[in-house]
Image (cartoon, rainbow, N blue to C red; front, side):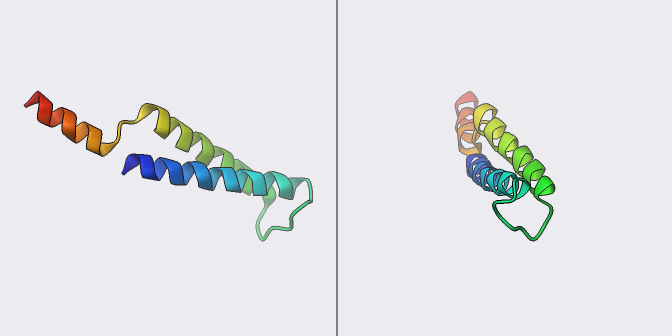
Length: 69
């Protein structure tokens, strides 16, 4: 479940980051501030990458807990 959320954050952040950067340089007209979109995209992208790298999935934790018992 955690890995699914991380992938969603990663993809959503990448899309928002690209749209924000394109909006900053004037290639795309956006409904909101391109700076806000770029910053949020960067934050979500970094959060998704860090969750994929450092978090164990809930299924893996459950299996480890059963082995310990």
